[in-house]
Image (cartoon, rainbow, N blue to C red; front, side, top):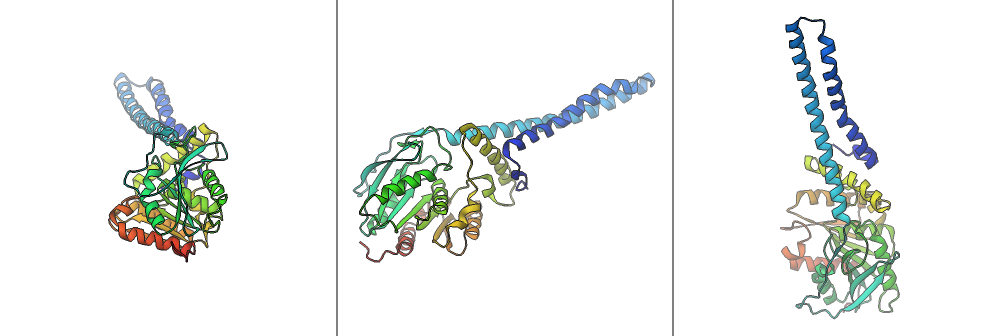
Length: 350
C-alpha cells in the first residue's frame, strides 16, 4: 500500500503528513467559530438546535483531526527512536569461546575513516578465505561455528566486529550503510598477505551481515561468492510488496527513519539492496531463509529473483532467522563448505 508513497523524500513526506493531519483541526476550529454567526437570525429554539448541530460536527471533525495528529506524532516518535537505536554505539568485550579449537590471530584493521575493526584471522590451507560478518548488535563471536567448519575444510577465515559494535571503534552504527567501506579495508588486509589467493575470497553473513556482504559484492568484483542467511533490508523499498498491513507500517516508519538517520549523521543513504543485487552476477550467491519465517522467505525469494540465475535459495527446515546452523547443523555445514569449494574453485583441499 505504501510502495508508491515511499518514493517521496522521507522528511518531505513527514511534513506532508503533519499538514494533512492538521487540516481537520483547522476546519473544525473554523466551523466552531462560524456556528453562532450562522444562526443569529433564527429563533431561539432553532438557534440552539443549529448551534448544537454545528458544534457536534465541529467536535466530530476535531476528534478526527486529533486522532490524525496523534497517529502522525506516534509515527514521528517511532521513526526517531528507531533512528537513535539503530545508530547508537554498542560496545562490549568479546572473548574467544573456550570450546573452540581455532588457532586465531588477533588483528586490527583500519578503515578509510580511521575506524579500527577488531578481528580474528585464521590463515588458509588452500589459499581461499571467507570473510564472516555477524548480525546487527552481535559480534564476531557469533560466527565461530561457521569459522570452525570452514577451517576444518582448509579455508581461511576473517571475522571482525562491525563498526561501533563490540570491540570495534566508531562514533555510530549505520545498520550497514557505511560498512561496505570496512569490507574494502578487510580486502586490503587480505591482499597484503602472501598466504591468501586474491582470486579466492568469499563472504558469508547473517542478517545485517548478510546484506553488507551482498552490497559489498555488488560494489566490489574482488568478492567471488556470497553466502547470506536471512539478509536484512537496507532501505524501506527492500520490504517489497508483501500484502501485510504490519509490513506497510514498518515500511513507512523505516522510510522516515532513514531520512532522519541520513540527516542526523550527515551521510548519504545507500540504494536499496533490491536495486543493486543484480550487479553481483555472474558470481554465485546462496541465499538462506528460515522456512518457519514466512516474511523472511518472501523477502529472500524476492532478492533471489532480482539477483538472477546465479542465485540459489535454501529454505532451512525448522529455521526462523539466522539459526540454520543450529537446527540443521550437518546439512548446513555440508552445503556451506560445498558452496565455497565450488564457488572459489578450491581443488587442492586441506
